[in-house]
Figure 1 (tube, rainbow, N blue to C red):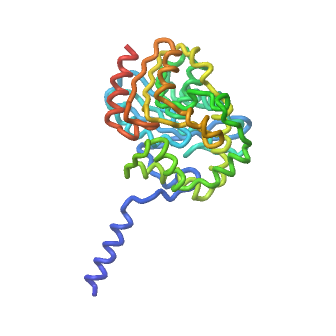
Figure 2 (spheres, rainbow, N blue to C red):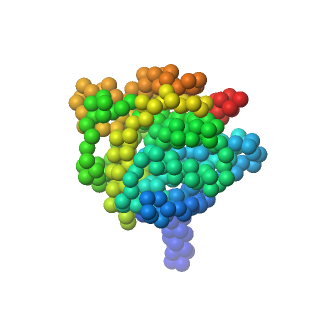
Length: 333
């Protein structure tokens, strides 16, 4: 009986050690980030806030820093494989969670704008003593990266865009705007199932791999845990920001070296479900949009991944990272 009991206890301990879905609150307290997380305390819009970030030093520095900007349905942690590749190539890598997202403050009353988030990011960069970083943004982070480079052209060494959303103005194309209350009601319905269903169809063009589940669990845990209502509200506010502040009309004004890395099977178009079927099928065609936008950015370089979708860095990390390091090196020569 003693031997049986010991085996049972041992099995229970092993089971407890196995990684499972994140059990977290609104700030991902129980989700493991790949590197140590620090905070920048600051005041913004009359409030005491904090911006969480990772700051990874390379073993053999090349003297350059890359700042990674996450997308709306992502966190700084999602950059895990990219951080390793860039750090291994000699880059210092700084990875913030934007205000309203993941491990950073989520003020209930905040005027979200790409301009404000860019200013917050610039404050972090200045605090860390970084001069002329490379700004690399994915999805919503691509929109933010464009705004940052427009605001601080002389302080930006280069801009890298990974499947940025906003390569078209959805409202101008026929997607109606909605109220914050309507966006909030939709966010309140978010679950692991709805996240996975959306990403399976839009991000990964009908393909799914078990390793994607980790990122679904990360997002879903914030909605399901304590403070989930605040997460839904923050996401509603930032959705309104994305929908009402297009950057596509200004891409021709970019004056920094620009690299675009695009998964051509991407079909992301926020609000597609609110327009007519005829309009919906014309939206989010990255295979057409990416070359059109690249042509508007003087001297830009376009690298495409024909078989990949919205998150090429997640879908095929080794291929994406190799292309990123090689293309970024060529861009900076």
